[in-house]
Length: 118
Image 1 (tube, one colour):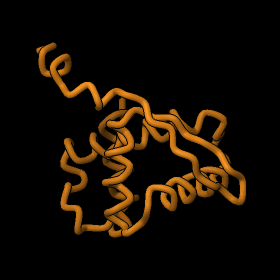
Image 2 (spheres, rainbow, N blue to C red):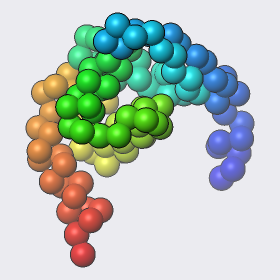
Image 3 (spheres, rainbow, N blue to C red):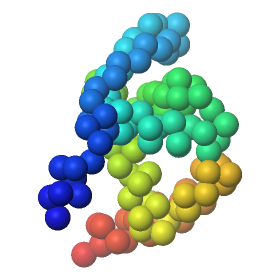
Image 4 (cartoon, helix red, strand yellow):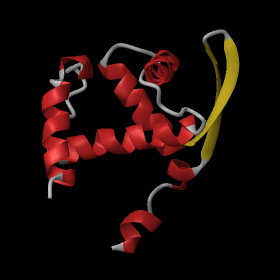
């Protein structure tokens, strides 16, 4: 089992720092390449650049009154959730299907009942 992870290409866990501007403020985000690849896939589904999507996530997180002090961790969780939603059959991996077309409330309701109903 471990060989599945150990023998993966080492580039996947190498870090890459990207600079971007969020609301006029230049910042940098450091993530493993695996997460950059996943963010690129997520952004492409809705015809956005990674920078555009990250800015959108940041602004919407602020609007929802989330703590964005550890935004990098939030981005890792976004990637993990995206892949888990695919694995659980909640969304398809068809890159031509925008994530904006997903019935978010239905997905969240099913997720709620799967993980938190007891």
